[in-house]
Image (cartoon, rainbow, N blue to C red; front, side):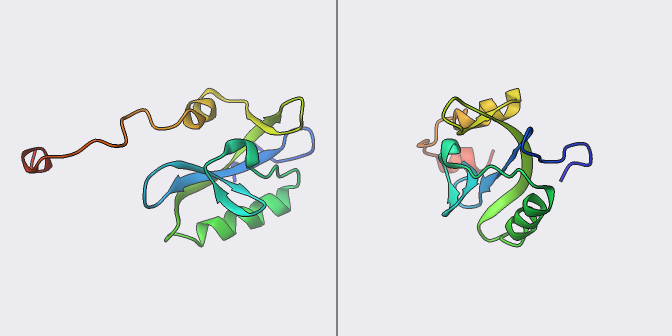
Length: 108
């Protein structure tokens, strides 16, 4: 967890990472990892957030690079990004995901 950011009721956090198999952005929900950022669990307590982060870091066969990031809340109380990077990640891959590769491209 960032030494400058401590989750609290006023500044909650979400736990995010990238899926190991397809690289998609994922968020920790009450049911596990999801690609739906609106389903992300909001962490308002530093100790709970740190425990969740450590559990995510213990899943290297599932996710890559888990981290906690500050989140806001929309009118319904659902998580919304407060930083440009996180808003960008929520829009999905910035490259075409159904691309095919030729053997020539594989050796480039």
